[in-house]
Length: 161
Length: 266
Image 1: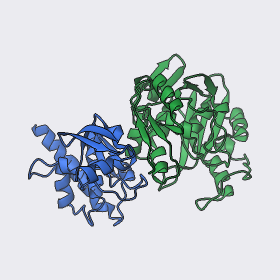
Image 2: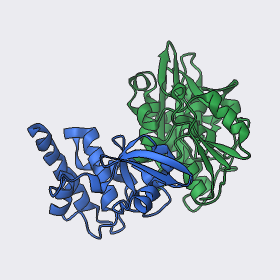
Image 3: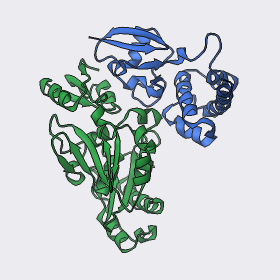
Image 4: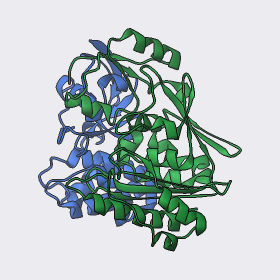
C-alpha cells in the first residue's frame, strides 16, 4: 500500500491504494468519480482519457503512483458550476453523444486537441487527432462536427477573457 | 494485474540499486506497453521501477552532426522538438505517426527500443541511421542492440540513457499503418549519410524483427530515386505472415514503402 497525493479537479486528495492500482481505479473506485469510463481496458479505446498536468492521457494505462504530485482533471471538473464547458455544450448541440459511453474520453481528448491546435483545426485534423478514441456507435460525424464547433466557441471564450 | 511494488527513483543510480534489490524487477518508462501486458497478467514483476521522474533521462541535444535524444523523452516532446525537426525531420515525422496522441504524451524512445516490438517504429530509424544506444554502463551500436523479436543486447538491470543519431544528408520514413493498432504493417526508413553511404531498414516485415534491406541499399547507391527500386526483388522467405497480410504482401510493401520514403526524404 502507498499513499498517493494528487490534485483532482482542483481539490487536494490523499488516497491509500495498492501499488498495482491504476489511475482510473483510483478515480472511479476510491474517489467515486465514475464519469471517467473504462471501455476496452487494453489502452486502445480512449474512454478513460483524463488530463494530467494539462495533457490528455489514458488513465487505464497509468499506475496511480505515477500521478503522485500531479494535477488531474476529469470530465466532472470541466464545467463551471451549472455552466457547461463549451466542448460539452457543442457535443449536446451537435448530437455528438449518441450512447454516451465514449463521450467523457472524447470530450477530454477534444479539449486537448483544441488547446494544441488553436484556430488551425479542420475536419481532417480532428479525425486524425481522435484516432485514440473509439466510438462503437461509429457515429464520428457528429463528434467531429461538435469538436469543430467547440473550437470556435473556445476561441471566442478565450478572446473574451 | 498481479501485486507489485512501485518505486519512483530520482536518479539512474538509485534505479539500478532498486532493481538489484527486487527479485524480479522491471523498469517502467512510459508504460504504454508494460502496463497493458501487466494488466493481461502476461508479466508479473515483483517491483516496478518508474524511470519517469529521472531528470537526467530527459531532453534532446544537437551537437555538430550528432543528435542525442535522452531515453526518457516522450514521443510528444520529440516530435515537437526544434532540433529534431531541423536535424532529422524524418524522426519527427516517424514520431508523429506513432500510436495516438494520448500514447505519444506518455511513451518514450527508450521504452520503445528496450521492448523491441517487431513492428515498432524507432528500431527502423536507429538501424537505418546507424545510431548508438547509450546505457548506464556502455555504448551499443544499433546493429548489435536489436537481436530479434522483443530481444535486445540489454543485460538485466541495464538502463538505456540516450540514443545518438548521426545527422544524415537525407532521410525519409514511410509506413503502412495498421488502422487499429497503428503499428507498422511494414515501414521503411531510408537514409543517405553524409559519407555517401546508403542505409535502409524495414520494420513490421521480418520474423526476426527490424532488418536492413541490402538489395534496396545497392539500388539506391547506384541511383537515389524511387524508380531505382522498381527492379529490386525482395524474397518473402522469413517475412511475417498473419491475418493482416501474407509474406509476399509484406515483401511488396517493403519496396513500395521504400519508394515513398525516398520520395519524401529531406
